[in-house]
Length: 106
Image 1 (tube, rainbow, N blue to C red):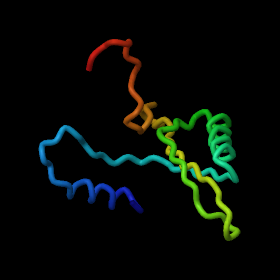
Image 2 (cartoon, rainbow, N blue to C red):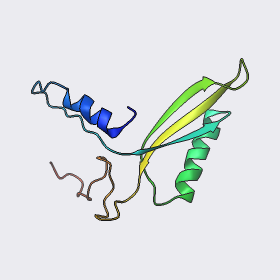
Image 3 (cartoon, rainbow, N blue to C red):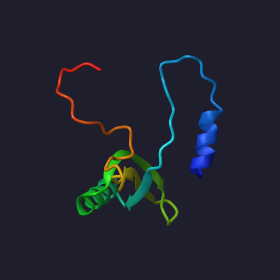
Image 4 (cartoon, one colour):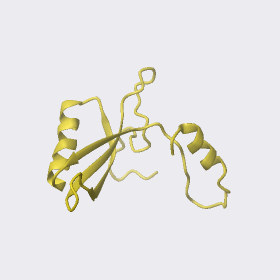
């Protein structure tokens, strides 16, 4: 999706079928790290995470794509990240919750 408005419109158009699932829209940043090998691309993503401790990773995606020279390939890591909200101090992603003791049921 090109904008939050377009994404919100798409989610709003979904028909509620009473399923036990949900769709939401969040404003996460996508960082793209390239490398000649998968290891190089992963290392670049690790370097970003190490050098920018305020970024909170939410997900990684690895793709092998055609390189700039015909017949070659490069690897691309797309890492979705967020930073703490300056007003609330919370991260924007749904994957971050307060700590819960192990074994506690929801």
